[in-house]
Image (cartoon, rainbow, N blue to C red; front, side):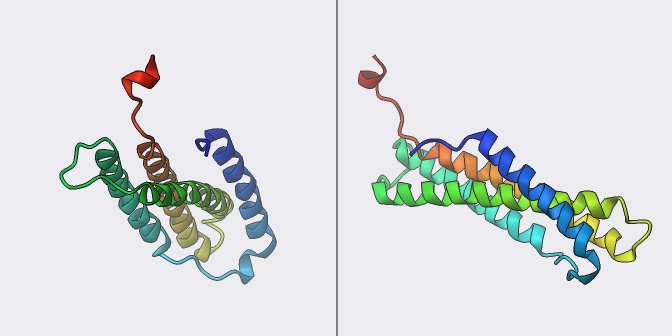
Length: 150
């Protein structure tokens, strides 16, 4: 499995950012208000993945007390990291697009002021999730032994 490329995540965020902006431009009046819990959820998931990254990193390198992780546990953590980085990038782009559209109209529409705050916080929280997911993915790598390095 190859490492997640930053270019891929940026492309995902850009495409969904344009879609988020277009969705807001076309149908903002008929959309439901953004939930204030959206950024909280993304931050909690990011904190979980950051903690998991620390645990996996220590166990894979044999520095933590207790036994090493089973290879399938590491593989599951890697799949979670790859899915979270892609999902976080998609949501960061979507919330970013909504933020750009609502921020420009926050003085004209009362709902846009609240939605721009939630969209901006959610985009930031999703970027935090992407960072934690990339950290978790990196922690799943096995350390290079001296024999393989030579």
